[in-house]
Amino acid sequence: MKLKLLAVLTTSLLATTAYAQVVVNDLDGYNRTTAYTNGAVDRIVTDSFNARTFNAWVYFKEGGSECTSGYVYDEITGQQYGTVNIGTAGPGASMVDTVYFNGTFSDDQLTRNRVLALNCQNLAGEQYKVYHKFSGLPAITWDTSLVGVGEYKMPDCTGASAHCGGRGWYEQVRYTSSLHINNKNDDTFCTSTINEGLTSRVFNGYDSTPLFHTNHFALENEVYNFTGPAFRKTVTCHSPVGQIQRTQVWVISGENDINLEVDYTVYK
Image (cartoon, rainbow, N blue to C red; front, side, top):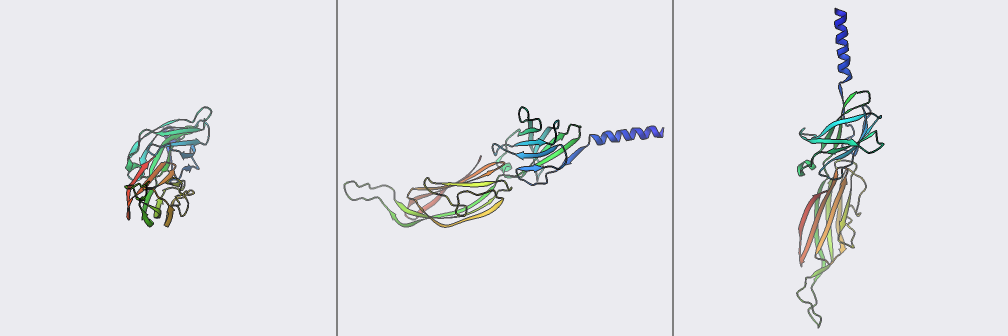
């Protein structure tokens, strides 16, 4: 009787162990790719088409492995944002799956670090809970100023071809920018645009950056040959989870009358 009971307990323990779900954590932080040393999944790569949703590629260690379900949640609060769809990457891609978030993120959720949790198994039936972290969108802090250089000119009101009543202008403007960007991962770069014919130079003299995590960029008293009424600059940061675009427009209304009238952010 004791031998039979021991055999039953042993068999039960083995069965439980065979189907126990093993946790596989993300040890690579919030970068585009998470690589795993154990489990069914070799790596997960974030590749979102739009900031409001989430897309990723799941690469398996061997054929026959699969992920059957999953969800996205807030890393700090644990709040679940929704489930994900899982599909194959296409014909012949037996070792790659695609993941697509069923829902859209709110403005607040876009700024927060989130986690993808997947239930996966290999060909032998071993079960794994696989986690992949992805960051919130970059945070852009931007302080700028614009002043006219030299004389504020008005249209010539003399002669037969006089055009009085038009707007005035400066031949040049002087621009200062203090730009702090926290990309929250190492796989993001930023670009900047300005009015046609000019070069932005907000990134320490350049209009684009290499990949970086966090940095401060300064541009001090940069003089532009500009006679228009609206001086526009845009900074866009391109992250694995989407894009954030900040736009500022300084309007030159008169002599010493230059104001920042537009300052808005778009998530793309």
